[in-house]
Length: 293
Ligand code: 5GP
Image 1 (cartoon, rainbow, N blue to C red):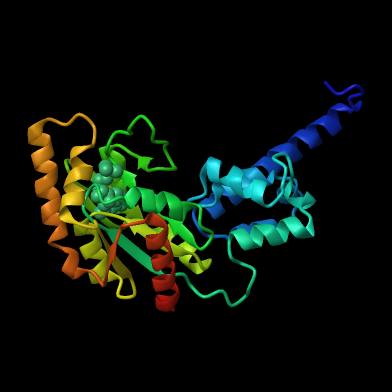
Image 2 (cartoon, protein in one colour):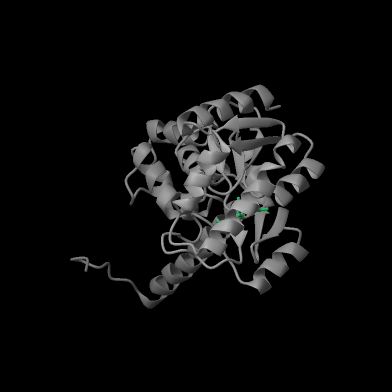
């Protein structure tokens, strides 16, 4: 409780409460516009309305497509912004740190590349994407899926976990850049964040299975298709067999699927051998830089 709450007349109180309602409305429509990609983070920050300037930076960051709360906190930490900071209280250095995070420091930031990464199960794609997630030049797309979350997975970070009805609705409103069925579940890449992050100069990485990669190849002529291969078939077999407590039938099915996936390698623009994840990440960066338009 504040020690001396201001004494307000009933009229003043009514005015203050109406102003509070209006401010909340401004803030929630701003968050919606940012979340839907109609406004960029920096357009929001530059909005002079008091209601927006008094908004918490973390609330706005959380609305940026693909940022999600854990990432928003990491961005705030790197930019030296305290969690309670409001937009109007951002200092010059903090603003420029934020711009660096979103690669918006140059007016002429070139559009980022669209990289599709596929490869057989067990090849280490998720280790590569987790390395790329922390790399400032990349943004790893977050797919929607009808699969149930695994114990370690978080909604909005690893996937957007949706039910069949929501997935159907996303298909019919053309929200997917591609989607496919895999092992009894559906997976799709939401289109808007991919566009937004590329426009902000990030190289966008889609870690998807082969049918989705083929759709991208057919519809997005400028996409860069990268296949990740194991150092050898024996190595992949060993990695797959050491996974969990699968029955012999399940192991055989995984191997058969991996063999099928390996056969698609020739359809890709580049084939990178995953001997060391750091090397693959460096190769992806140089491919993206050479390729972006
Ligand atoms: P998991 O269920 O193991 O996370 O993923 C199964 C497969 O779905 C993996 O091969 C993964 O690359 C793929 N996948 C994940 N997200 C998408 C997506 O948005 N589209 C497509 N086509 N495949 C995806």
